[in-house]
Length: 365
Image (cartoon, rainbow, N blue to C red; front, side, top):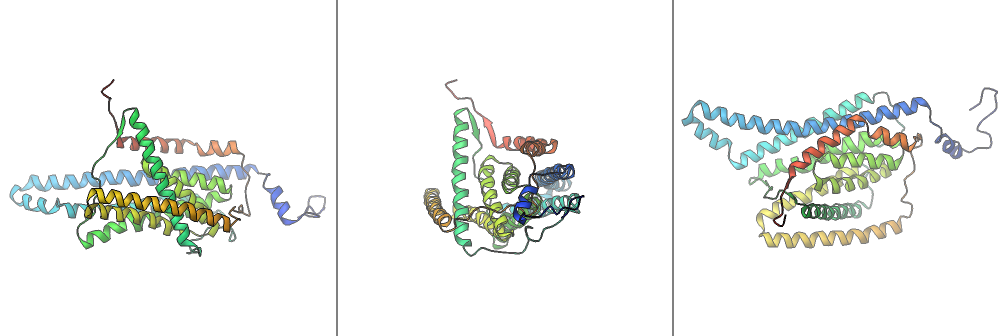
């Protein structure tokens, strides 16, 4: 590379130092692209949230209206038909099929929207995160660590709810388990809670969004994609462990340059929830809580031990920055993250999350 006067600017400067110096120089065009990227990220996640939760509400409304419509036409025939339609098993199957279709539709449409907005972005073969399954050799150990992280932050969420309880803010409790009875219903439910989210959520957050933010810094990309991933679940309990899981998954995704492990870890976490719902239906309540307590404690303990061993054996746990890293000032990053769309997104998520709580005036007041 030469300047206008013909002097070689790379003289006595190795490639790394030249690239490092380049990282502290940002053109106005790069800043503009960054701001547009943040708008695209916020818009895609907000679109996914709207499609997920509002279409689920529409489904429940249409199903209820269908039953009412049938019942109002011919009471004698309707009684038999409505008994068939309202059976608990068929209702679960219908809800789970709808959940699968809505999730596929929501994440596919939001992903396509994001790709359309980001069209024309250059891909760096050496730094680009791929859809190809690259699984690390110590995947089992890493999955145990991931499960430990999830269970630890589930405890954090429980402490959060207990703290709110002191102020009279109670969380609705009840039997929310809806495990099907038939083999076909169980398979459909497995796809609804394990397969579909593991694939489509990872494609949006760990493939599209993480890829787009990766060049602006590993820490920034990991934190932003994970916080948005946690909040899209619209649940305080899920926010804690989903954000933590997202950070670990994002780290491994950048490390392996593939979403393969993130998909497997996501499926493993959801499979544990799937198995828990089955066991709560077949085991006595006290036995289930005891088994669950023992399992979580063992996983957390093993996770801490394996994490310590893993870090000690793999001292180079730092992530290399994107080879085409673009330096953006911290103030610009913060302001771009808190754009109008992301602010509305967080407000909507908080409003949805409030539906899980109610205020109870304590007697001593």
